[in-house]
Length: 83
Image (tube, rainbow, N blue to C red):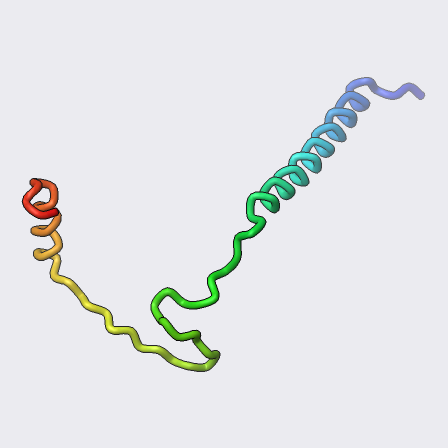
């Protein structure tokens, strides 16, 4: 019984693609891991000066601006009237 060369060639290419995928994935993982060394999550929240305890609810004072005021401010900045 003779082995079909097309099937052998297909299996060789499939194994090479699988190997290249594994090498690429491991290299990308290692590259990303070294890129993120020294990066940590912040210790506090950006909206509060005090550390947050679990279970506490916080209310933030949110100021809602009018769209007309925002657009007039942007237009003034574009025209150079306001720095």
